Image 1 (cartoon, helix red, strand yellow):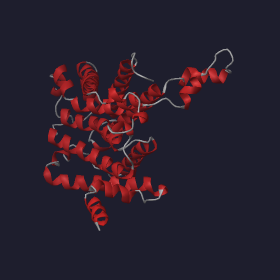
Image 2 (cartoon, helix red, strand yellow):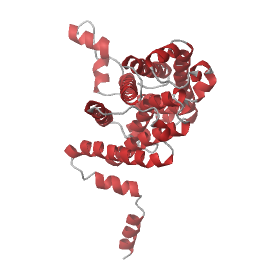
Image 3 (cartoon, one colour):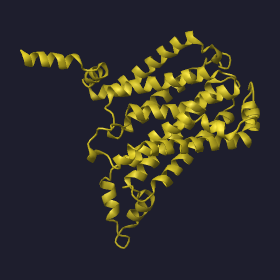
Image 4 (tube, helix red, strand yellow):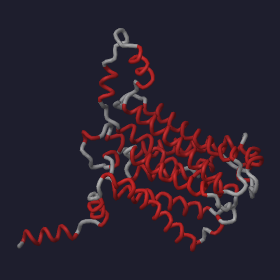
Length: 335
């Protein structure tokens, strides 16, 4: 009876997310991604509908009417592609949350800075976008060992560095500074005239003319933390794989032309390959999400304007990835 009571007590304290994840594990593999897409879209729709009652009405003043089927279809298709990138990229809930924040923020930053949309509306929109991707991933996929401080030591490389709070802080500040530098440099250079030419209906350009680098950088504090979580930490925690062993055995004197080309193109360590792939993913997602959403939803935006605004954020993502590559290439960090 004591054993039964203990069993009953143990079952009673199982957290709700754990029970939901256990139930979701019963979904057949072939149905898991469709379930993810449907769940995420329904959750996003429900949250935006609810948020409309709490002050997101200022978005309506800058939105264009979407009457064409390709406009709505394009946004839905991109949403599915975005989720597919995370699903087949083997991201967990935290990975996709960081990627969503970084790739969705530029669109809302545009509206807040130049279209007089309130900051609270921007943060509410980012919160909805992040939650509607994080929660389905959390329920359908286990967390990565990199994001589990209690994970076995052999599962992750450089565990002591991954758990080092000052390193997380410094790399977050560094990433925020890179975003701030790209945006501030654009504000002081080409961007104001470009916006005036290609964005019909801008409310105010003072956000660019009056920008100060410290305050611009401070505004990217959360983005900096998300960037180090999505780019730097997974690369640092990547363990050597079969590819690394094959590259270590490469002999230029006996290798064929194809092997030599492959070695020169992709003969990097697991850490570097992880960082490169995630940087490319972030740049691509930022460009596509920002460009599509800006062009399709904001009244008066030309295609060239949306493309230029999106390219700025893709450039920032590449710069952050490059800086993290340089930071991680030091003695004492295992490959």
